[in-house]
Image 1 (tube, rainbow, N blue to C red):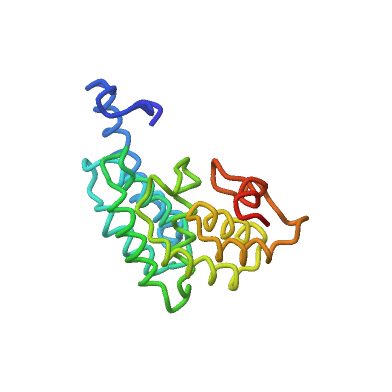
Image 2: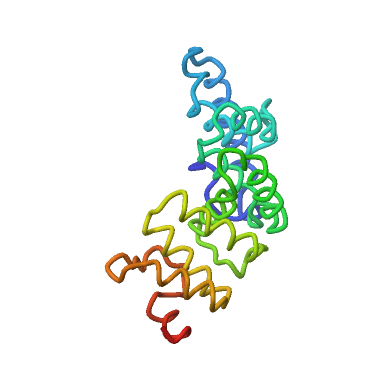
Length: 207
């Protein structure tokens, strides 16, 4: 990526594209030559997934690498983050593809994650600098997922995330329920969705 640069595809010179592909091919070969104990680690698979997702000029197919990896380590969330980052519109994907991916894998991991993964994966998307209104998330699914997330993981960060999503959705009942579960000393403005704050949302809800 140092050779390619971080700009849009149209801004990258042919020479930089060529170097980008060559270096990714070299990186893939280095991974294939790694000792077996490294090949049996989630980090090895995560690196291969990143390489395969960045170019079609390598041997590995990103979908195959992802599915094999997540089958072995379903709770290694970096796999999902890598795939989501490459499905974004700026890299040729779409918000519809993001929603389809999140629905599919949330459903696939229900036995171990319940419905909580839907919210966790969208939280990963938002952490990349996006806002809910840019996405195609389903508020009813999100609400169910957030409710389960805060039950499974009673972390103040997730409770704040739930309240901020409810505020974004302008779901008064959900917001009141979510904000009432957060003691004032556990309000975390940094956990709130960009453009929203506990104070502004409480003013909106009249709480």
